[in-house]
View 1: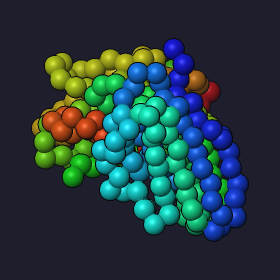
View 2: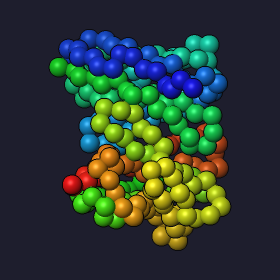
View 3: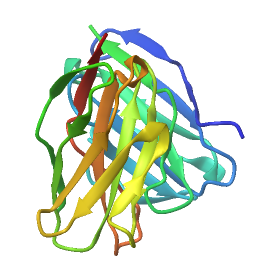
Length: 112
Length: 115
């Protein structure tokens, strides 16, 4: 079974530029999550989708972050414009049951 | 609101020695509890989970954890560690009743196994 795919693995941008991350969940997993993991901290939930609907985006900084999950499969997370404090690893996860999240390898963003 | 406290940010231990990584949680409702492991430059992998039933939960790679409701703890243990166990370990809690399956993570504990 293929795992959660994410791209790109690494991205370096200047502040105020934009960036997009892509995630393809495990086939058949209805729930998809985006987490932000800042160095030295645990992952923090940004947004949760159930199929193509948003379940929770209360911690998503909506002035600069956006996410979509068209057709209930893959998802894109965008940051525009980026700030220095957005430097982090962006983890995508999918699940089909209670807490059994399967994570991708993450996309590491460095904002200079 | 739920929260997770991992009491140790770093734990060094000699190879073949036992280890315990501590986790305490706070929640006003019933909970599901989890331990995840993260190897360098990789995503998180589920080690074990407690949803209900027996309070002693066994996971992969010889790890186990015990759910203690009165002490709101879910400590992770392994009787004999290997070099390959060097990684960061995250405790997480989910609201067992809401069905949204969101996880709140602790800040992590870096386990370093010394040869």
